[in-house]
Image (spheres, rainbow, N blue to C red):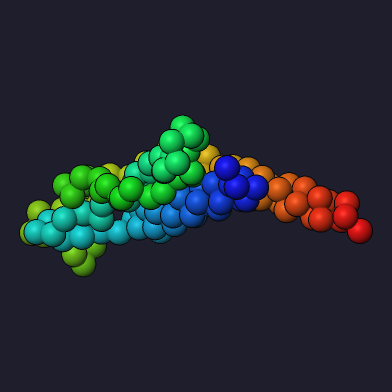
Length: 136
């Protein structure tokens, strides 16, 4: 086990949480994106994370990684909006099936996870710096 494992593990988690925040911000930005009925609605982005297993047989993991991104329904919601220039003859458009409240909760959870891992890196740096100063 390396003395930098805490920093490496938290660093990998920072990447996962940043990707999650990017996906949530993309979802919120496209919340009101209308599409014609003959096209799919904007699809919600959802990040899939996975743990990075130990390679040395210690059983201690080595952080997290983005395993992929899944997408919400291309059907979305059918909304009657005859004033929309993309509306069909019946006045319908496709809107994404994304809940703003859910996205806000996801944003807060991802933000807190990001902050916690950043604090872990900061504390590890302080500890390593203090250890280096012991020898002076």
